[in-house]
Length: 197
Picture 1 (cartoon, rainbow, N blue to C red):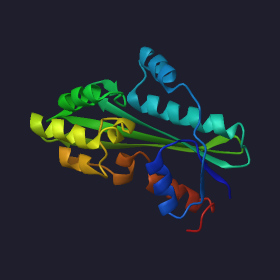
Picture 2: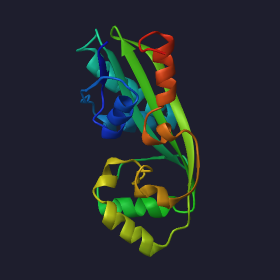
Picture 3: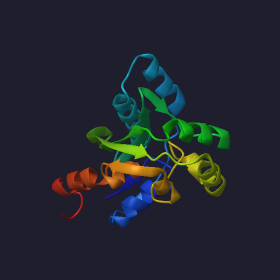
Picture 4: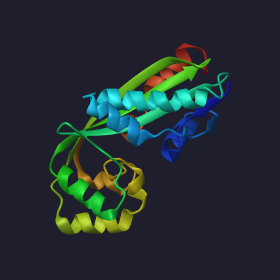
């Protein structure tokens, strides 16, 4: 079986490999910002935005590799009706974390699997995370220690690293929080006989 991850996310590739899959990483080149902005202008929900972006990535790579299983993924952070993006600067990370401090937000992790050039499976996992009311000095030192790594993550944190210290409560699947509904994907692949189960 040829299995392709249409994403440059190191943590997603690591999760899949740790689960025993032989994964080829081929990041899809799609204009995520343009797709996201167009969907939001049309009033699409964060769930639909995440699902559409995941499918766009899978479709792009599957067009070149129809003989393979191609997985597209995307993660959206939804907060008070807005979709937050990956911070491009330290100041943007600071502003985003100040906004989320003491509040609850949602992470929506979408995955779409293509086979034979067609979508065969999709799932959007949802997690709710509540940040603790951390101090301004902790926020400043956290960003200083973790930049630029946190620029790769929507929300400006990585729960698998020091970002876990920002939180008071986490509700939801750990893998979904990291950006991939892994258990649901593995269950599907096992039921279909794609992997041993």
